[in-house]
Image (tube, rainbow, N blue to C red; front, side, top):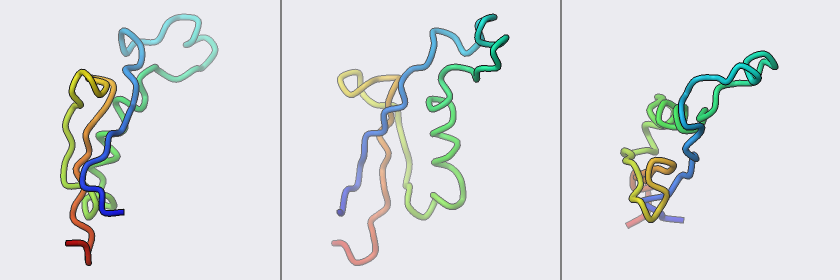
Length: 78
């Protein structure tokens, strides 16, 4: 569609990245998985041809719970 910047909302996860004892006993994953994982995914070789870069979003767009992702110009788009 020609978009050059997209807003990716990851959420902030928990107050801390540690597990609570009940969640750990139940085998539940740590909170904040998207917040930690999305930047790693955006840096993978398969996405480098699409993603130019990313930065934390401004407060009014989600702050630490969101990212601005800048996309490379698609071939054939001016």
